[in-house]
Length: 312
Image 1 (tube, one colour):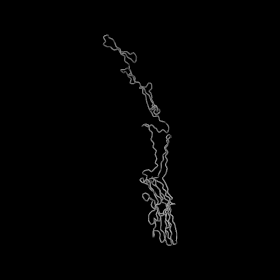
Image 2: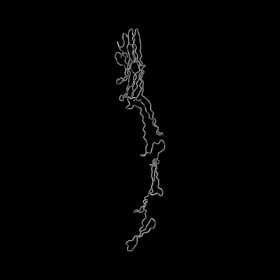
Image 3: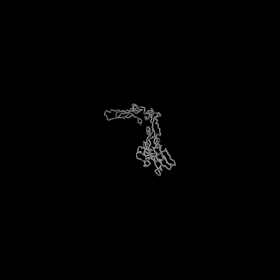
Image 4: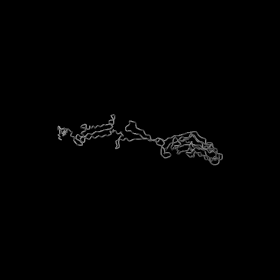
């Protein structure tokens, strides 16, 4: 078998055969460089070099082509193998209001929740904390930066009653019963309230020589619905005299009736009312030897009741 090269890439091979005429056959074969970087191959259909195309895109879609940057770095002319480097990165707006960041785990936008409370808080009944309203004002949709404004206000619920009509307390001395007055307020919601009353009562009596008085009034605060005493009795007016001459005398007793009243969640609200009573001690139930009771009143025109919520 003889061979010779027609060029650097093709070789011709002459093969002997058993042809009686001693004819010789020539066969051409490509010379393929065995280097591992050679992409040329010989197939049954002929020589083949796989076509290579490397392209990049700068966005996920034609309508958002500035969100992702894709960079293709081609190889140098003499590099072997011909390696194309493709890298992608997120394009982040450098604006200071941009909350998007790139982390080792991926893109991240920190979630923000801002809330406030402006009503009774469960679990805070009957403790020493004050009632605070917290108001959160969110930014407008287009604001930059997005500033949330948080304000806290001491805005306790409050109210006042009075003046009211007067009540004759003389029958209560003999019946030993408390008289209802029109001085009342409704505590509107669960919580603790400071209730303060400025209550006035009057006792007037006439004494003859040798007569005496021992009379006094009391006031208290009750729950109208249940009758429970919320603020225990406070002494108001005291009329206690002995006289050697005929005497007419009146006593006024402005009284402070104050304390803490609790409204439970189950109650929801509570109406409280001032009651008053006239007491007499000693012989004649406070009127001895001809003393005469002329007047004993809860004096409504000079009586007031105020409340302020101090805790949830």
